[in-house]
Length: 103
Image (cartoon, rainbow, N blue to C red; front, side, top):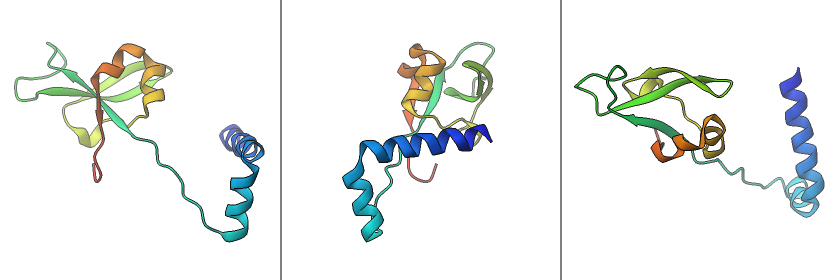
């Protein structure tokens, strides 16, 4: 599987760049995994995308750098990293809203 291969290559590259951190974690079994901050893309009310009861329209689907679906609520909204949002289009970063714990 290409995805697993890419993850393995990235892990090995990280290990090679951080030998002391890797060795300590391997020996002690203690390490922390940093979770990246996730964001919703919350677009303001736009005619045709939201109704009068919703303050924002959230992006719910993006493929190959193109946003293709929207939702009125956060339940179905995409949770993306800053890098993922900017890879769609840098201009969407201004509409990023941090995901809170439990959302």
